[in-house]
Amino acid sequence: MTLSRRSLLAGAAFLAASTKARAAADADVAVIGAGAAGLAAAAAIQRSGHSVVVLEARGRIGGRAFTETGLGLGRSFDAGGQYVHWAERNPWREIAQAARVRTSDDATSPWPVLVKDGARASEAERRQRRAGFGRVSAVLDHPAGPDRSVAQAVAGEDEAARAAATGLTRLTLGEEPDRVSCADYDQLWSGDDIWVDGYGALVAGHYADLPVRLDTPVTGIDWRGQGVAVETPRGILRATCAIVTVPVGVLASGSLRFTPDLPATTGEAVAGLAMGAYTKIGLALEPARLRAQDLRDAVILRSGTPGLTAYLEMQPFGKPLAVLHCGGDGARALCEAGEAAALAAATDHLVSVFGADIRAAITGGRLAAWWTDPFARGSYSIARPGHLAAREALRQPVAERIFLAGEAAAGGAAMTVGGATLDGERAAAAVLKRLGS
Image (tube, rainbow, N blue to C red; front, top):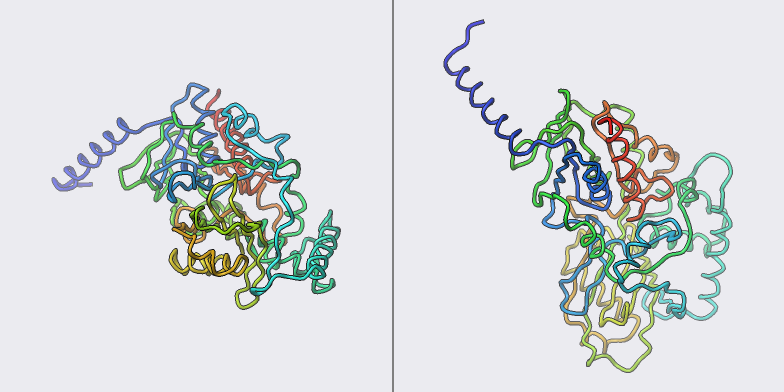
């Protein structure tokens, strides 16, 4: 083979560039994503004495645990996770206690107002809705037979039960009932829930000292060699192993390229999961303009295509704030419409509950549009009907050097910050075993 001067120069330039990249960025472990899973994994790797670098596409850490502070002093709210679920075994319970953050069990709140298509529901309608939830709970409690969707499970029930099922999946999972696996819903852990004032800020503060490279999106992972080459706009980082903690919505989108492609079993696991669209819209309120009225929380039901089921959280932790929670296709439509349209819609919903006078008290707002966020592509993972095994399959390492982790792989702890944390630690333990620690 004859080497030309051009090929020699090109080869020398490549060698110089790759040597420079290795010298500047090599690590034992590269962690992709600085959400709760990635941060927990990196902390465990760091404690072991191995070198680790975390690459994060956003300009902040925490991922879908994020406390929004853009509405001004005293008006922060958690745009992502806000509850320490199943607190009896959730590591964030002790972390929150040690940090002395404000918490509540939310057990003393009065029953919310129920509003249907702009009108307050009657007591009879309220009783009917509660009865519907009771029947849905009975149907979904340890369902027998082949897995099916929540919609299929309640198909034989009356209208109240079917409506309750829709409200349940939209406001707990952020998804429509025909796309939710009964078996996956049944396996989710239960227990005490602790409401945290600033869960996202707690996560960011707890991991503030980790080595994270912000504004560094990963575009590709090449695992053809002995280790992995992680591609970013800032260059290539080479590591022995990679822990990939991006949401399954990002994996499914193809924005993170793997060379060669991930194994078929891993691809099938990703395809067996989807992302819900749980969405929050925060509205800042001016206390001086609020009437002396009972500003209670409310459940808002709206028909139409797509329909909307929303929960209006009034003055959380006593703050001059209203936060509209919604999920499913109605929430997707709000995210896709953009922040201005979403704020206008949230304002209209607030007015439908408390009257036109409250409009003057609204001074601003923010939309937490996880569905259209390119680094999330949804709120949290949902197992498609018939795909219960996808979460476990996602845990299987690729060539003993790519380890997927996050809430999607957390089994019964899925869809939570605590689950992401535990699964990040699980992946780190597997990596350390691979490294001989």
